[in-house]
Image (cartoon, rainbow over all chains, first blue to last red; front, side, top):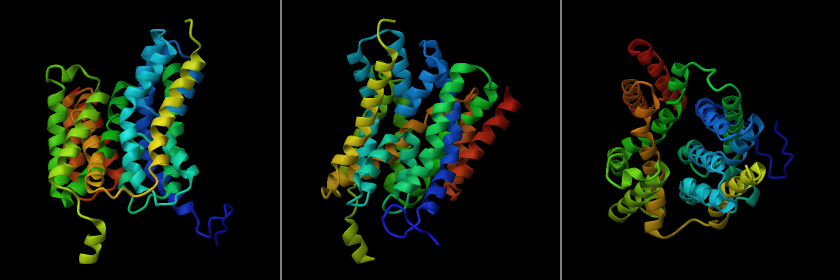
Length: 250
Length: 102
């Protein structure tokens, strides 16, 4: 018995919302820990808890916010902070291009804007692992858990810098990476190109930390360069099969 | 501080929002170009893999704990464990490993 109030048909959005919230829990836990350390950076830049909360609620970015805080601390110009934010968050541009292909054609603008508000490494990962066209309500469920965790975690970090024992912060900080593994490994098992690509990404990502010049770039910039180079290489050498033909052949 | 903190915050928020929503709102049709489609298919795996390693080993107090989390996470994910199970197991192994090691 489900009555739609939105006029979009009788389909209930509750199951998708609930599933999104469940999958959002590991994201939220990881966010609490990461945002906590981000809050310490915010406090060092002179922000109070409310301002830290606001930055996180509106930006949903770790590297981008961190770069922003250091820029604010340096009392830089407004143009500078715009450029710094743009560069530190540029990978989200790439992710959103990729994500645009997960939306069913004809998805209303409001869903695109609301999902776009919280395209992060982790939520992008959830969206990509979703089967078929992305259900915006699944994303809303995840965002409802993740966004407040991120913002509250930052505020907590500002107020009580070292409340959590280092061991707990250390353990929580791998939740996000565990999630990434859960997203990239199963497809790598099915698709050899993806498997090789994942291993190659690991190796080059490690190498980039030591190579001259490249190692001086920010990790966000290195991520962009490696993503573009490796994905373009794979696309040239191993273009994906045409979905329509594949379905007909099956 | 001569600059207004709330103007800083508004600029950061505006730039972050536009970066994410412009592609989502401007690209409204399935891309038919085979190269672009292949490129965008591979992007998430490369991005997430690049961000996972070596970061997972550097995020923990002891690199060994991070490495154990990486190996366990990969093994569990390979065998089809859920997202939550993989993430929680990685946290647990770090907690246990650092309790023993440190």
